[in-house]
Every structure is written in C-alpha cells, then in structure tokens.
Image 1 (cartoon, rainbow, N blue to C red):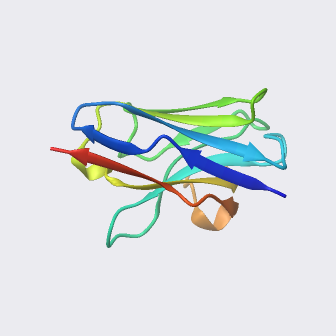
Image 2: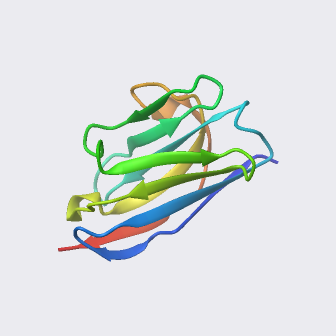
Image 3: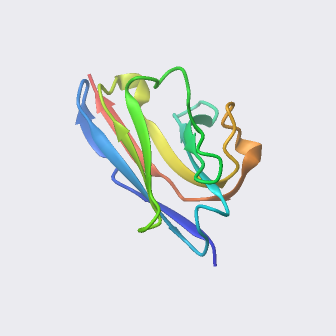
Length: 123
C-alpha cells in the first residue's frame, strides 16, 4: 500500500524555523516525486515545493524561495521541508504528496496524499 505521512508541524514564532518530515512507503522515489502543499483556512491549497529523484529537478513557490528547502533521503524514503524565517502568512496545514514534480507544482499532478500537519506561526 502506498502511503505518505507528514510530521513535524507545530507552533513557532515569526522568524523561527521548523522542519517537516514526509515518510513514504510502498514505493521508491524513482517511481514518484514528492511535493509539499499547504492550505490556509479559507484559502485554496497551493504548491510549496517538489523534488524528483528521477529528473533531479526541484522547484519552489515564489513565496517560499530562499526560506524553505526541500531535501530527500532516498535510503530512508524520507523527504524533509526545512522552513526558515517563518512568517505568520506561512500558517497552514502542510501536506505531503507523491506524483509528478513540475515547475507549477500542481495538485492535479499528485496521485497520493497525506493527511497533513498543522503549522502555526505567531506574530
């Protein structure tokens, strides 16, 4: 069974850092790329970042470039999202997904989704 499970969310002050983890099972990163999405209350889900082991491509949304870093550990089947210089507007539920990694980080390109982990950034 293919699964992706997020962890690492929590409450952090503005300017702080947090690292999210995505544990993948039932597939390898040669089969699927991994992406991070987020959804704030009352807003649409948006792509944050994605990485593909098969193509070597990594993409970020403009809103997080220079602050967030995605990294994969293929041996552990884990993908991490290091989030630095967090802002209140980064507050959202963050979702890990498996699918295809394209520059637009599209919801429709994802095949499998986790249940999300909540990140709250206080001002």
